[in-house]
Image (cartoon, rainbow, N blue to C red):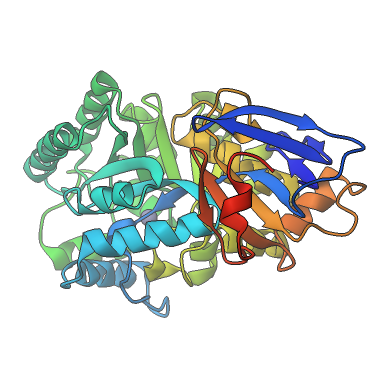
Length: 412
Ligand SMILES: [Zn+2]
């Protein structure tokens, strides 16, 4: 192909990629030779935060408060969709747009996980635990652990997700952290999503108190812990257990430093951030502090469609303070690290899973352009998805030319 651009910012032009038995065999520059494909090769994208069990549900406008929106999510869950089929359809759609792995929150008793696996999209399914009262939270933890065994921990990536600080009882959070550590199950938690969440943890009042009163299932603590969300999760042992912090919208300097010190990852969902019209995310500060940042789409209930590539493009357009190469890194390597996998596939190292994204037609100056300019092109409307490759298997993209599947297999 005309060029390859890797998560570490290296560019090869032209490049030849060879694949054997689903793994990268080699990636080499081929100066002087005629490239076989008018395309640019990127490592495949990782969608670090999605809710495939909500696929196919209608979006909920953000006109009301966040807690009103949350009540709407509850209603969406109680409808009669075929969750496994809808999840498979959404996972396959992500696959056609460059994603080969999804960090998915499964609150559907494993149906979404089965749908994703059926669509042959990789990932890690975090089995969700909700329980405002301690007994309810313990029962849900036990159910999640049983489900993990049934789904087969070794066969595919699984994890646990205590939903959020306001929806899981404080006493059970350390128990979840210990269970996760014992079984080698990584964690993901919606954390520091809104200032209202911070207020509830610090003072025990505000919209979350009203919401919990309205639901009538008790409170997640007797007295407010008087901690900000990141410190609260840290005290419960969640960050040390390798917890992926989902959103991290309401962070102060101390929170950023704590996340860096714990080696935690943050999944940022730009489309959802826009949906709720939230203040500027501290993405650049997190990156500068050395925190691993991944990108996610969240669900279609808070986003205009679930398309990580489009989201990355929107992020580049909206945030000129974040370099396109950083966005590439977050969308590839950042996602792999966040989901607890080795980073090598994001630089197409020999022996790692052959997961890649082919964009084309390549820009006229692909050979001469800087890596930064090529990344900016990759996240622009000019770049079309020719194909996604997952473990060497070719999935045709939106703009695959006729006969592409016959010629692209194996190498280009
Ligand atoms: Zn979410």
